Image 1 (cartoon, rainbow, N blue to C red):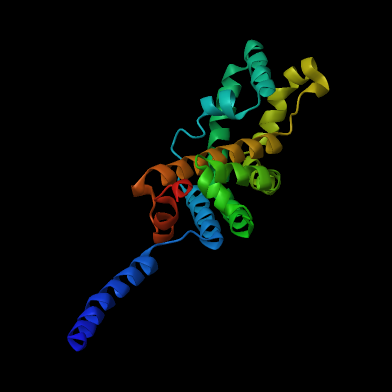
Image 2: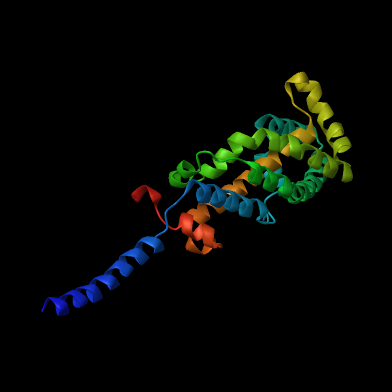
Length: 229
């Protein structure tokens, strides 16, 4: 009887052992390396996203991208009767901004790929736009400095610096040194922030929408709530 029972037990136990083993091997466990790689991949995709046609409209540049102090200055210029000059300037500036944003993509991608996400697990678990916020905090200043010559080249191509200097003179006489009139620096900051907003949009989409997880790595890392594990 024992000779019959033992082989039967072996036959029953072996499938269970393999079943348990495949379950353990088939389950994915998040690692620091995968978390960091997924963050880089997600941010890079966001940086490469195309801008919509209205991302740098002249209205957006005048009311949103420029700091409040500059917006007030432009309003002052409008009151001085130079509206047509501002309209022509801002329309051309929006074109230069779009060109600079496209040219800045490699700068952002390089910065993302070179970053060390030491707290990658925390960033993955925090949700929202925490990866973009980390990038802005850790590399924002260097990205703006790197973007400035790109922006300056576009402004020179469209001969916008001279136009800006002519436009700003009346307001400068009123505001003096209180106004930052360095257009390449102002626009580098504006384009940089627009890029960060685009990256943040992509990050939130990846975290919330399965369709936005376009690679196996993004699917593995961002398809579940690791705070529940």
